[in-house]
Length: 142
Image (cartoon, rainbow, N blue to C red):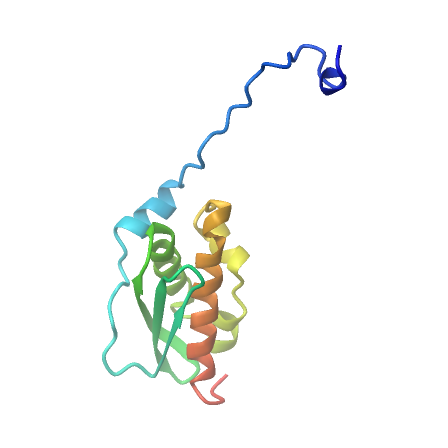
C-alpha cells in the first residue's frame, strides 16, 4: 500500500474524485430569475451604485418614512447570483429601520437565499455594501 492509500485502504491510486457542481437553491433561483424588486426607483430618498470586482453593477434605491425603509428596489447588470442577492436584500429591508438594514451581513443574505456557490459570495458582499452606501447617503437619519 502506498502512502496515498494509508488513510483509506479501499482507495486505489486510480480512484477518481467526483466533483459535483453546486446547485442553486430554489429560493436563489426564484429571486434570480424572477426578481420582484428590480427597477430604478423614481424620487428615491437615497440611492447608491457600485461596481463589483468581476464587473457586475449594483444600484440600490430606498424610500423612507422617517427612519424606516418603506420601499426598496435595485437595478443590476450581473449574473443570476447578483440578481438574487439584490432582490432578496431589498425584500429583507422592507419595514426595517436604517440601523437594522445597515446591520444585515453578507452571510445573513446568503443564508436567506438558502446558500450560494462560494464563487458567488462576492455578489452578496456587493449588494450589502451598496445598500450601506445608500443608507449613508440618508444624512444622519439613522
